[in-house]
Amino acid sequence: MEEIFGLSVGTFRFGLFASIFLIMSIAETLLPRRERRFSRQRRWTVNLGMMLADFVAVSAVTFVVPVTAILVAIFAEANGWGLLNLIGLPIWLEWLIAIVVLDWVIWAQHLATHKIPILWRIHRVHHSDVEMDATTAIRFHPVEIVFSIFVKAVAIVLLGPAALAVVIFEALVNGSALFNHANFNLPKSLDVVVRKLFVTPDMHRVHHSVHVNETDSNYGFFLSIWDQMFGTYIAQPKDGHDDMVIGLNEWQDEAPTRWTWALLLPFRNPPHTKNQDNISKD
Image 1 (cartoon, helix red, strand yellow):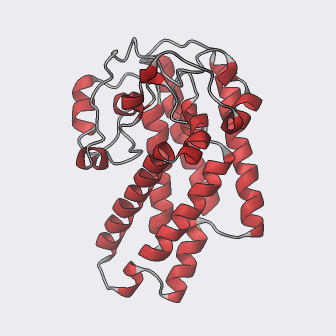
Image 2 (spheres, rainbow, N blue to C red; image 1 turned 180 degrees about the horizontal axis):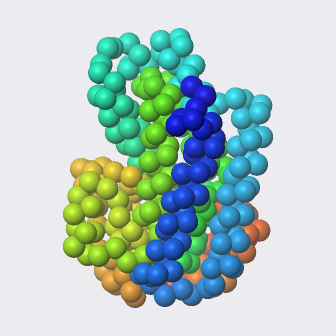
Protein backbone atom coordinates (compact mmCIF):
# COMPACT_ATOMS: atom_id res chain seq x y z
CA MET A 1 0.00 0.00 0.00
CA GLU A 2 1.79 3.10 -1.27
CA GLU A 3 -0.94 5.59 -2.19
CA ILE A 4 -4.34 6.85 -1.01
CA PHE A 5 -6.38 8.91 -3.47
CA GLY A 6 -3.26 9.23 -5.58
CA LEU A 7 -1.18 10.57 -2.67
CA SER A 8 1.54 8.88 -0.66
CA VAL A 9 0.45 7.78 2.80
CA GLY A 10 2.64 10.43 4.41
CA THR A 11 1.30 13.21 2.18
CA PHE A 12 -2.29 12.09 2.75
CA ARG A 13 -1.91 12.07 6.53
CA PHE A 14 -0.11 15.40 6.68
CA GLY A 15 -2.57 17.05 4.29
CA LEU A 16 -5.53 15.83 6.33
CA PHE A 17 -3.91 16.94 9.59
CA ALA A 18 -3.08 20.39 8.22
CA SER A 19 -6.58 20.83 6.79
CA ILE A 20 -8.34 19.92 10.05
CA PHE A 21 -5.91 22.04 12.06
CA LEU A 22 -6.61 25.03 9.82
CA ILE A 23 -10.38 24.55 10.12
CA MET A 24 -10.19 24.26 13.91
CA SER A 25 -7.94 27.33 14.16
CA ILE A 26 -10.41 29.39 12.15
CA ALA A 27 -13.31 28.12 14.27
CA GLU A 28 -11.39 29.05 17.45
CA THR A 29 -10.89 32.55 16.09
CA LEU A 30 -14.46 33.13 14.98
CA LEU A 31 -16.30 31.20 17.71
CA PRO A 32 -14.07 30.93 20.80
CA ARG A 33 -15.43 28.90 23.73
CA ARG A 34 -13.17 30.41 26.41
CA GLU A 35 -11.03 33.52 26.69
CA ARG A 36 -7.27 33.01 26.31
CA ARG A 37 -4.87 33.57 29.21
CA PHE A 38 -1.79 33.58 27.00
CA SER A 39 -1.23 34.57 23.38
CA ARG A 40 -1.47 31.95 20.68
CA GLN A 41 2.09 32.64 19.61
CA ARG A 42 3.45 31.84 23.06
CA ARG A 43 1.61 28.56 23.54
CA TRP A 44 1.75 27.42 19.93
CA THR A 45 5.53 27.80 19.91
CA VAL A 46 5.76 25.30 22.77
CA ASN A 47 3.16 22.85 21.46
CA LEU A 48 4.45 22.87 17.89
CA GLY A 49 7.94 22.50 19.32
CA MET A 50 6.81 19.38 21.17
CA MET A 51 5.43 17.98 17.92
CA LEU A 52 8.79 18.61 16.26
CA ALA A 53 10.57 16.82 19.12
CA ASP A 54 8.12 13.93 18.71
CA PHE A 55 8.91 13.71 14.99
CA VAL A 56 12.66 13.61 15.65
CA ALA A 57 12.27 10.96 18.36
CA VAL A 58 10.00 8.76 16.26
CA SER A 59 12.29 9.07 13.23
CA ALA A 60 15.30 8.07 15.33
CA VAL A 61 13.55 5.08 16.91
CA THR A 62 11.99 3.79 13.69
CA PHE A 63 15.33 4.15 11.91
CA VAL A 64 16.80 1.66 14.38
CA VAL A 65 13.65 -0.44 14.82
CA PRO A 66 11.36 0.03 11.77
CA VAL A 67 8.13 -0.34 13.73
CA THR A 68 5.19 1.82 12.69
CA ALA A 69 1.51 0.95 12.82
CA ILE A 70 1.30 0.70 9.03
CA LEU A 71 4.47 -1.37 8.59
CA VAL A 72 3.38 -3.76 11.32
CA ALA A 73 -0.05 -4.15 9.68
CA ILE A 74 1.59 -4.94 6.32
CA PHE A 75 3.95 -7.43 7.95
CA ALA A 76 1.14 -9.09 9.92
CA GLU A 77 -1.00 -9.42 6.81
CA ALA A 78 1.87 -10.88 4.79
CA ASN A 79 2.49 -13.50 7.48
CA GLY A 80 -1.15 -14.21 8.29
CA TRP A 81 -0.83 -12.95 11.86
CA GLY A 82 -3.72 -11.62 13.89
CA LEU A 83 -7.34 -12.58 14.38
CA LEU A 84 -8.71 -10.76 11.34
CA ASN A 85 -6.15 -12.43 9.09
CA LEU A 86 -7.29 -15.84 10.31
CA ILE A 87 -11.02 -15.42 9.75
CA GLY A 88 -12.85 -14.37 6.62
CA LEU A 89 -15.06 -11.34 7.10
CA PRO A 90 -16.57 -8.83 4.70
CA ILE A 91 -14.23 -5.87 4.19
CA TRP A 92 -16.67 -3.38 5.72
CA LEU A 93 -17.06 -5.49 8.86
CA GLU A 94 -13.32 -6.07 9.17
CA TRP A 95 -12.69 -2.33 8.93
CA LEU A 96 -15.41 -1.55 11.46
CA ILE A 97 -13.99 -4.07 13.94
CA ALA A 98 -10.46 -2.78 13.40
CA ILE A 99 -11.42 0.86 14.02
CA VAL A 100 -13.53 0.09 17.09
CA VAL A 101 -10.99 -2.25 18.69
CA LEU A 102 -8.01 0.01 18.02
CA ASP A 103 -9.95 2.95 19.43
CA TRP A 104 -10.54 0.94 22.62
CA VAL A 105 -6.80 0.20 22.76
CA ILE A 106 -6.02 3.92 22.62
CA TRP A 107 -8.66 4.55 25.30
CA ALA A 108 -7.12 1.86 27.53
CA GLN A 109 -3.62 3.20 26.95
CA HIS A 110 -4.81 6.68 27.92
CA LEU A 111 -6.37 5.27 31.08
CA ALA A 112 -3.09 3.54 31.92
CA THR A 113 -1.13 6.77 31.57
CA HIS A 114 -3.25 8.21 34.37
CA LYS A 115 -3.20 5.17 36.64
CA ILE A 116 0.45 4.06 36.42
CA PRO A 117 2.68 6.62 38.20
CA ILE A 118 5.66 6.50 35.83
CA LEU A 119 3.39 6.87 32.80
CA TRP A 120 1.52 9.72 34.47
CA ARG A 121 4.80 11.60 34.96
CA ILE A 122 5.26 11.54 31.19
CA HIS A 123 1.61 12.18 30.33
CA ARG A 124 1.60 15.27 32.60
CA VAL A 125 3.24 17.14 29.71
CA HIS A 126 -0.05 16.96 27.83
CA HIS A 127 -2.08 18.06 30.84
CA SER A 128 0.29 20.85 31.82
CA ASP A 129 -1.08 23.11 29.09
CA VAL A 130 -2.85 25.87 31.04
CA GLU A 131 -5.22 26.44 28.15
CA MET A 132 -6.82 24.12 25.66
CA ASP A 133 -7.01 24.47 21.90
CA ALA A 134 -6.19 22.43 18.81
CA THR A 135 -2.44 22.58 19.54
CA THR A 136 -3.00 20.85 22.89
CA ALA A 137 -3.74 17.74 20.83
CA ILE A 138 -0.09 17.63 19.71
CA ARG A 139 1.45 18.48 23.09
CA PHE A 140 2.84 15.06 24.03
CA HIS A 141 6.26 14.12 25.33
CA PRO A 142 8.39 12.19 22.80
CA VAL A 143 8.67 9.24 25.20
CA GLU A 144 4.87 8.90 25.29
CA ILE A 145 4.64 9.03 21.51
CA VAL A 146 7.25 6.28 21.14
CA PHE A 147 5.50 4.24 23.83
CA SER A 148 2.23 4.60 21.93
CA ILE A 149 3.83 3.28 18.74
CA PHE A 150 4.76 0.01 20.42
CA VAL A 151 1.36 -0.31 22.13
CA LYS A 152 -0.37 0.00 18.76
CA ALA A 153 2.13 -2.39 17.16
CA VAL A 154 1.29 -5.13 19.68
CA ALA A 155 -2.44 -4.54 19.21
CA ILE A 156 -2.10 -4.71 15.41
CA VAL A 157 -0.12 -7.96 15.52
CA LEU A 158 -2.82 -9.53 17.69
CA LEU A 159 -5.77 -8.13 15.73
CA GLY A 160 -4.39 -8.27 12.17
CA PRO A 161 -6.24 -5.33 10.55
CA ALA A 162 -5.65 -4.30 6.94
CA ALA A 163 -2.97 -1.63 6.53
CA LEU A 164 -5.42 0.77 4.90
CA ALA A 165 -7.81 0.37 7.83
CA VAL A 166 -4.94 1.33 10.15
CA VAL A 167 -4.21 4.45 8.07
CA ILE A 168 -7.88 5.47 8.21
CA PHE A 169 -8.04 4.79 11.94
CA GLU A 170 -5.00 6.93 12.69
CA ALA A 171 -6.42 9.71 10.53
CA LEU A 172 -9.71 9.52 12.45
CA VAL A 173 -8.00 9.59 15.84
CA ASN A 174 -5.65 12.42 14.95
CA GLY A 175 -8.43 14.45 13.35
CA SER A 176 -10.82 13.89 16.25
CA ALA A 177 -8.10 14.88 18.74
CA LEU A 178 -7.70 18.23 16.96
CA PHE A 179 -11.48 18.61 17.02
CA ASN A 180 -12.13 17.73 20.66
CA HIS A 181 -9.23 19.80 22.00
CA ALA A 182 -10.28 22.85 19.99
CA ASN A 183 -11.45 25.99 21.77
CA PHE A 184 -14.54 26.68 19.72
CA ASN A 185 -18.17 26.92 20.70
CA LEU A 186 -20.06 23.88 19.46
CA PRO A 187 -23.79 24.59 19.95
CA LYS A 188 -25.15 22.75 23.00
CA SER A 189 -27.96 21.13 21.03
CA LEU A 190 -25.41 19.68 18.59
CA ASP A 191 -22.99 18.72 21.37
CA VAL A 192 -25.68 16.61 23.07
CA VAL A 193 -26.26 14.63 19.89
CA VAL A 194 -22.63 14.24 18.76
CA ARG A 195 -21.27 13.11 22.14
CA LYS A 196 -23.60 10.11 22.19
CA LEU A 197 -21.06 8.44 19.89
CA PHE A 198 -18.11 10.81 19.44
CA VAL A 199 -16.01 12.91 21.83
CA THR A 200 -16.80 16.63 21.68
CA PRO A 201 -14.72 19.61 22.86
CA ASP A 202 -16.97 20.22 25.89
CA MET A 203 -16.76 16.55 26.83
CA HIS A 204 -12.99 16.33 26.57
CA ARG A 205 -12.42 19.69 28.25
CA VAL A 206 -13.66 18.10 31.49
CA HIS A 207 -10.69 15.73 31.28
CA HIS A 208 -8.29 18.70 31.38
CA SER A 209 -9.72 20.07 34.63
CA VAL A 210 -7.40 20.56 37.61
CA HIS A 211 -9.82 18.51 39.75
CA VAL A 212 -8.49 14.95 39.94
CA ASN A 213 -11.89 13.27 39.74
CA GLU A 214 -12.58 15.14 36.50
CA THR A 215 -9.10 14.47 35.10
CA ASP A 216 -9.83 10.79 35.77
CA SER A 217 -12.76 10.86 33.35
CA ASN A 218 -13.57 11.19 29.64
CA TYR A 219 -10.49 9.38 28.35
CA GLY A 220 -11.80 8.92 24.82
CA PHE A 221 -10.24 10.58 21.78
CA PHE A 222 -12.62 9.42 19.04
CA LEU A 223 -15.50 7.29 20.32
CA SER A 224 -17.27 8.36 23.52
CA ILE A 225 -18.81 4.95 24.16
CA TRP A 226 -15.92 3.58 26.22
CA ASP A 227 -16.24 6.16 28.98
CA GLN A 228 -19.98 5.60 29.07
CA MET A 229 -19.53 1.81 29.19
CA PHE A 230 -16.78 1.73 31.83
CA GLY A 231 -18.14 4.39 34.16
CA THR A 232 -15.51 7.07 33.48
CA TYR A 233 -17.91 9.57 31.93
CA ILE A 234 -18.59 13.01 33.43
CA ALA A 235 -20.96 15.18 31.44
CA GLN A 236 -19.95 18.64 32.66
CA PRO A 237 -17.25 20.22 34.86
CA LYS A 238 -18.46 21.20 38.34
CA ASP A 239 -17.05 24.73 37.95
CA GLY A 240 -18.65 25.24 34.53
CA HIS A 241 -16.78 25.58 31.24
CA ASP A 242 -16.24 29.32 31.58
CA ASP A 243 -14.87 29.24 35.13
CA MET A 244 -13.10 25.86 35.25
CA VAL A 245 -9.32 25.86 35.61
CA ILE A 246 -7.42 23.88 32.98
CA GLY A 247 -4.03 22.22 33.42
CA LEU A 248 -2.20 20.98 36.49
CA ASN A 249 -3.08 22.71 39.73
CA GLU A 250 0.57 22.64 40.81
CA TRP A 251 1.68 24.65 37.78
CA GLN A 252 -0.70 27.47 36.95
CA ASP A 253 1.99 30.04 36.19
CA GLU A 254 3.89 30.80 32.99
CA ALA A 255 6.21 27.79 33.30
CA PRO A 256 4.10 25.47 31.06
CA THR A 257 4.48 28.00 28.22
CA ARG A 258 8.22 27.24 27.99
CA TRP A 259 9.40 24.41 25.72
CA THR A 260 12.37 23.27 27.82
CA TRP A 261 10.20 23.24 30.93
CA ALA A 262 7.65 20.99 29.22
CA LEU A 263 10.33 18.65 27.87
CA LEU A 264 11.83 18.22 31.35
CA LEU A 265 8.52 18.00 33.22
CA PRO A 266 8.65 14.18 33.66
CA PHE A 267 11.73 14.71 35.85
CA ARG A 268 10.14 17.36 38.05
CA ASN A 269 8.37 16.77 41.35
CA PRO A 270 5.23 18.83 41.93
CA PRO A 271 5.46 21.65 44.46
CA HIS A 272 3.50 21.26 47.68
CA THR A 273 -0.18 22.16 47.44
CA LYS A 274 -2.68 22.42 50.27
CA ASN A 275 -5.66 21.58 48.07
CA GLN A 276 -5.96 17.83 48.42
CA ASP A 277 -8.60 17.63 45.68
CA ASN A 278 -6.04 18.81 43.15
CA ILE A 279 -2.80 17.14 44.22
CA SER A 280 -0.74 15.30 41.65
CA LYS A 281 -0.92 11.54 41.50
CA ASP A 282 2.85 11.16 41.78
